[in-house]
Length: 572
Ligand code: ARG
Image (cartoon, rainbow, N blue to C red; front, side):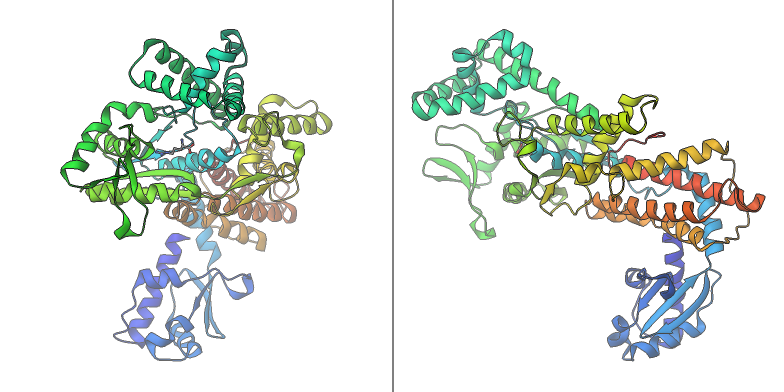
């Protein structure tokens, strides 16, 4: 589609040259103006000429007619000028021939923008705080982050996924105190992270009546900072247990991190940056603390050192950014967190710019809205917090129930239940623009009828079973395609839209573009499936063509599902 759209834009500019010499419009501008009409009777593309009317000093309908008259390239079947729009009907047979040829040749690479070769992107995502619950608030950073990684890898970038663990800070003082007072090795070994979170929660409850606990926690954290071997050993143990637990959740999603360098990794890397801030006269003392004044930029000051000289979240993030630039020489470093941290990152990027690092412009914060879950039914032992692992477990359980009822003899039931249950959560989450606050309803997510993950995976499985039944071997596509049903044409158009959707998902850091595309493709495919005979088609040519469309759908849908961290399911 991309290619066709470019060809159309070129042809339109040629007409503009002829009819409106000196018009100053270029191909990219026209390209951006070309729309996909909501209804196929209005063409496959439309140019809203009212957008040109001021520049060309002419009425929209008149422009549309002038452009229509000379427009003739092989891609165009017909052009009409209607109500100020230039409606273009493209030669679908030609498009289909060209498209299938590309999908067959490129396979799973079809749709890749191929612009990342030789460039590195660092992605900082998921990044839970050790010993605090890994809850549904982290769903966004984990899934959006990983999809962005997949999308960039697909575009040819080499990507480094970093889990910037919250593994340093006063919470460890609290945990150490709580563990010594109320914990036991056996309990932590057995219940692992649940035991740690329980200790953390208990600390807070007890500290309400006994404020001296806070003081104890500060002392223990100070000891940890000074390298006290016992505290260090405990701290390491807590982190190890936590990572082991996180990895179980990541496995469900097929996520592997390239690095677990969390905040503590930067302890010895901060002094250089603090010195630089001092040398550049950027540090001001404010009530004993050292801050960078950001008032000229309309932001509150950025805290670098507390009164007692200890460092902060910002300080570690400055050191982390410099370390990553030096280590990976990134083209971009992308941070995915909830929108609640937007100010943190705006301040961080500004301070790095003020320090004179010209790559501060390559730091990108990708925020997202809040997630809530419907009803008390889903509340867990930990009170209001719903853990990510519990959410996935619930989804998998429900799918297991459905399979036992509908398809009890399914081979590899467990794997399918995992793929569909986890996929449902992912798909549901990624159905909306990331900034939208969402309320999660598990029943809706798991439905096979609606616009859901199971529906998409089911459609994928359907393409697999048709190909299997027909013993289809993808050699090469038919050479001269002649479509015979409108549903074939709609499916071709849907397939052809994939490359540009990938581009906009990458440009807007918005995986939901792919989710919505998957629904479009599934619905075009299912209409085709219901209205056209495939294996039993009227002629050999038609059967071959339709099977090649099924194969193309299978390829593109499979790629698209993987881009949003979903597993391909061959059977459901
Ligand atoms: N640990 C933080 C949290 O859970 C997120 C860290 C994001 N990354 C960063 N470099 N600050 O809120």
